[in-house]
Amino acid sequence: MTPTVCILAAGKGKRMVSNLPKVLHRVAGTPLVGHVLDTAASLSSVAPIVIYGHGGDQLRAAFKNRAVVWVEQREQLGTGHAVTQALPHLPTDSLVLLLYGDVPLLSPATLVRLLGAAEPSGYSLLTTTLADPAGYGRIVRNHSGEIARIVEHKDATPEELEIREVNTGIMAVQGRYLHQWLPSLGNHNAQGEYYLTDCVALAVAEGIRVAGVLTDDVLEVTGVNDRAQLAEIERAYQRRQAEALMAQGVTLYDPARIDIRGQLDCGQDVIIDINAVFEGHVRLGDRVTIGPNCVIAESTLGSGVEVLANSVIDSAIIGPGARIGPFARVRPETELGANVHIGNFVEIKKSRIAEGSKVNHLAYIGDSEIGRNVNVGAGTITCNYDGAFKHKTIIEDDVFIGSDTQLVAPVTVGRGATIGAGTTVTENVEAERLVISRVRQKTIAGWQRPRKPRK
Ligand code: UD1
Ligand code: CA
Image (cartoon, rainbow, N blue to C red; front, side, top):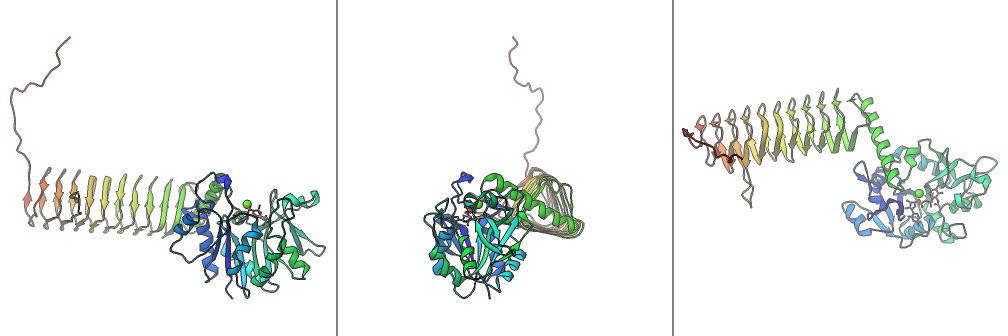
């Protein structure tokens, strides 16, 4: 039976020193609670419940496309109080999986283990062992090694403080138990809070076994409380992705200098130089090489594509064997054919450039369709915008565009035509013609440049 996931996310996050609710801070480009929602979606088909305290509008807006049951906890009176707010939405006849919104890297595999362990008795708890357990709730076990209760750090005796097995806060509990126990929780403890963790002792008192599931991967149960921890989690996460890529046969010149904010799929023998940033879903074909300092978002690069240093590619499809950069910017809705060359200081926007064409230096190509084997000279500009509307430039196969040409759209240059350097093309050009619009060169003899008077 599919569990109901309930995510605790009402904590103030004071140590973030931020206007943004803590769980909207990002790891690998995705809000903390977005990672948790992704994990929840992989385990359960039921809409997850998120208990929030602050920034409800911001949270709802950030996840407006997802089915989430939002529950407000107006005052943060403890984890037990938080889950109590969600009781009306919790089923009585299936497991509830309690997660934290600020613990982003929990693996679905661990949670599957946790859910499995909860099956027999209806209660399981995820624990870990820490060298320094300060601040955490300690797992107190009885003589036969069974979990007896959890004692919070602030309530613990010196003896209990020695325990290194801690509560991660993640648990799976039968819904009906929560309905039964939560209303009876008290707050007579060092912090005056309603502790969710007190449910453990209540279960044991009723003879319900609480199954402990131990994870030795501390990273996956690490929460974010301040920006230093946010950065730590980010680096650890990126390191793992880098290791996974290398294991799949990708060369990374420095695994510490690649950031994947989304999903990166690589073919064989891909080589990625330093400081690469990948956003959204990026697919790199076999033998793609990415130069240093490149940003590539939501794009597909065919086999053998070479991206040279300092290039930015966003929402584009790049054909096999193409060469981009250095210092190129390829903007959304661009499609480049096989072996196209886009050189330095060239911007391409919403354009299709067919096989074998070259735009090698200092050009702007926008809203254009360029055929095969076209050569676009240095400094060429498509004047696509009249201040109100965008217009199209069409350049057919085998055209040669001389340097410093302006193409005032809408305009079509026919197959095989040649445009002389410095031309402003304002009318359609017929195939195979030479077009040139250039003021004739004058020579003035005896010309004296103005001079400053001598002192
Ligand atoms: C809690 C556990 C502790 C465990 C630790 C792991 C309790 C009483 N203690 O500690 O055993 O070792 O987590 O990190 O459960 N939250 C709310 N509303 C509240 C209070 C908290 O939504 O009123 C949320 C927070 O946003 C956070 C999570 O619950 O996501 C844990 O809260 P936090 O204050 O960090 O943990 P502790 O209560 O100190
Ligand atoms: Ca915490």
